[in-house]
Image 1 (cartoon, rainbow, N blue to C red):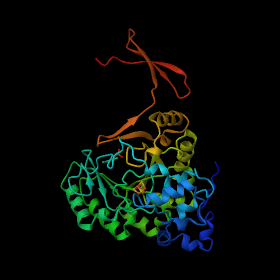
Image 2 (tube, helix red, strand yellow; image 1 turned 30 degrees about the horizontal axis):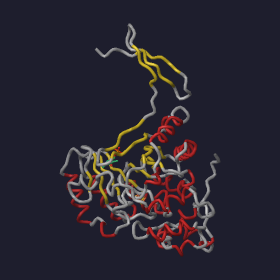
Image 3 (spheres, rainbow, N blue to C red; image 1 turned 180 degrees about the vertical axis):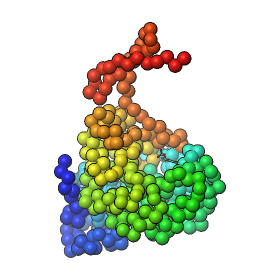
Image 4 (cartoon, helix red, strand yellow; image 1 turned 45 degrees about the horizontal axis):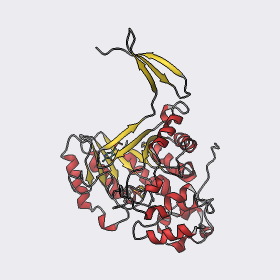
Length: 382
Ligand SMILES: *Cc1c(COP(=O)(O)O)cnc(C)c1O
Ligand code: SF4
């Protein structure tokens, strides 16, 4: 793998040929020039007839929006391009399956106050915005993301913060959305400041895909805000090595320099990253830029994303490949978020092949990452 990264600016499609570097680097410009209608994709992409049809049919279900930055990372000629699959509607989105759910993780059921999910005793998920620079086709929160009628008001966020302040068993708050970086620096500063003042919080996290979809948003000013409240744990969402371009690397560098602790939550997606080589390449590149692979998430049972799902065994095969071939810092946990609000459980490949009693305790036969077998004498707990 080359350490020289590609740049979205250099890859910008003919539609943006006249755009200069300063404009491209401005997140305001990126935001204002998002691609939304089918006409916006002229001079950007060759859509197949099927993709064109899906585009037209999907708009009232889940809006389309892409930053020019993210659009530039797509291969204009490849209908199966992993970036395109994540951002452009696919016919699969329009097919409903009986097992799919609108709110697969029952996030709305575990809300003590609107806009806050409190499922685990020690953690709370705080939704501060329902907008994102790019609407990922695999989003599990399609029910509210991109829907302006569900946006969290200032008063609602304040009520959530009050609930956290009144609930000492919460030690860890995850600011989520939508994408929380859709808020202004001032609003974020205010929210982070209020959370920081809550004595019983150990951890403040931000879940944001902006380093991928709008890395220009990570400005020096935003970095100052984050630094003021450090350490902020940031979990981002890279799904493919092609997303970690020069602009994204600059954003990650700024976050690291601001004292943020970076993790990545990859969603396992068919045709995007469902093979060990792609994940290995992504994880190496993340580590190089100070971002630790945190989770590989099994794609859940949300409506309209079944075409992205892979069998559980695919995730297990990827985990089996990673362990032993990349250092432990590059091996995330593979988790399934259980439908109905069961929470996350981790799945691991089976390493124990046999167990048989002996005079000194059970003899356990393990296999290692290369398939070689080793015997280990277990102790009897009594
Ligand atoms: C995923 C999730 C969390 C955070 O879980 P971690 O495993 O600690 O990253 C917290 N609350 C809810 C409702 C979640 O879905
Ligand atoms: S950035 Fe996150 S919340 Fe927004 S559309 Fe993508 S997956 Fe959904």
